[in-house]
Length: 171
Image 1 (tube, rainbow, N blue to C red):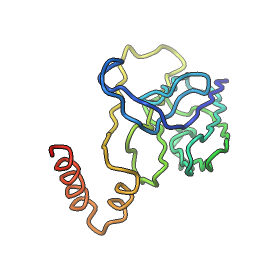
Image 2 (image 1 turned 90 degrees about the horizontal axis):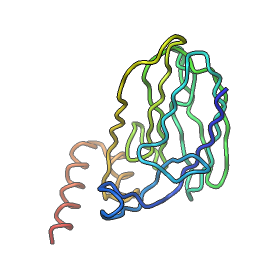
Image 3 (image 1 turned 90 degrees about the vertical axis):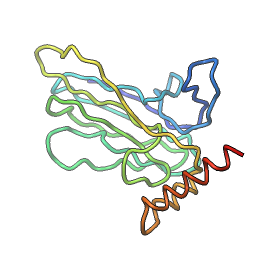
């Protein structure tokens, strides 16, 4: 059994290292550790039972996706209201490389810093691999991102939003 306790919160991320500039972001971390980008990697053997809890220290609701059995069945999202904790228990499922992710802005796809790898190794052996988790980051506010997601032509609106953001940064 793997017992996993995660939390979502706002924190400062230094993408260029400790001496680089700090950016305030929403991120996931293990409860007893700092927040991390990417989110903590989950790596288990096939058949492992996972008991996971997610505490939401953000001031808005959180939806976590991908914390489920990887067996081909639909994966239900885990809704975690602000200031609360929710738990889920499941078998790891089939061997493979998967991901889990969370959103506090209602994004329908993985976006921003709250994403991590979920790897299920076969019972015999472990792959000699490297795991890369690639996420996106933007300086747009959650409200601006929400506008883009609700737009009729999100691609066109996103391009305009990013252009406006870049214009403001170059002034």
